[in-house]
Image 1 (cartoon, rainbow, N blue to C red):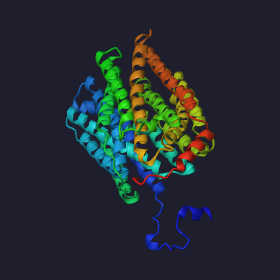
Image 2: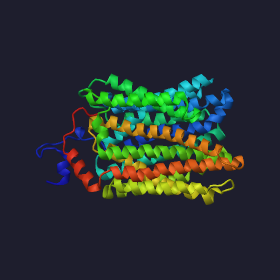
Image 3: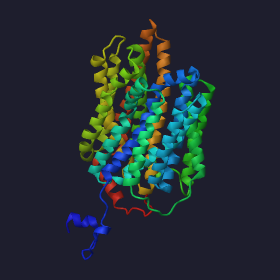
Image 4: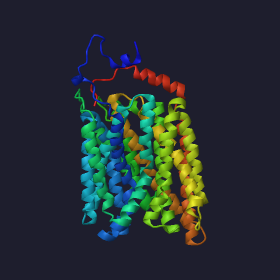
Length: 500
């Protein structure tokens, strides 16, 4: 029997009438739709940061209130990701994808129309809520759409390029919109992504298949949601008030305790929110750790490099955004051209180690920055090398974190990816901000030199996080031959009927 005949599963005596023929394969168009939705979510992490000074002048809120524009989003998004992923498993990922996109766009419009600080904060929280529904659904749809190893590597290369370069693209787009329109368009722009994404989803994605629908794990949902709120808010408090602050300590302690309780609850739940089999897998665990560590490094780099370009070198918002452009291009090159070719051949272990070491070298190049450095001679090489390393890590880690997962657990696995990335970003922002402030305060010399020293210490922290990707994550993931044997065994198990 030929391979083509084997794939059709149609008996030899059967005749397929044209009216009942399989629909045209829209997988790569579905990938474009998923990429558009993912871009909306990842852009939001940085595009609003560029708009904050203008929004503050327009709405008249104080400096100490400004961080709530960021915190409201991260609190809602980070704490509800696991719930959003499980809702996709329960009610159909196409449904949650569309609802998430529509809600995200509506909250963005509300933010753009905000007449005061409170309305803007509420809208940002709404973006986080619907983003937590959208992001896991997008990754889960990608996971269940592409199963062939070579096609999967290409698809995750594209998706990883978007996820890895979205923050830098947000800086660029935010600079353009702020420079030529108003800060409100940094929110309104999400409507464009939503219209394209919803239209594509309705036209191209198949209807979800109805099957057995387990009950939602309410106790697990409550414990992990409150726990992640405590952790994310604790890191935000640490960035603002320091690690010794009573609120910081209390939030982190309570959050950690609730996460520990969540693990206990999930081990005994009949229908767990996050089946522990999803995160116990060694390869998946190593990939999730890599995603978290990349979040630490990446968010810190974007934050302090933005400060350096804007405040030390005196770049405008638009110039700062354009200055970041080589990095997303470098990430896209590694994620779409290098990873798809190498991942099926050498496996993620090699790419995580190579990417971690490359990103470490690139971030260390930022230590060459000075008060009078040039962008082309100092910043550009660091952006390119760092981007290559990040592209290798993000695309291969996301692929590995969702490979071999049972179809009914795809949403939970995808939500874990987003959760690790979000929590890693919160840790990176808080930890490196604290390190920066301490280093700058205790450095002698003039203020400009003290600030530059703080940047260098923060960049060193980011380089350590990238190096840990190579050492820790690369060490956890199995060798390629071992992974292939395990994935082959998993693929031999029949898929459940309750597919979405």
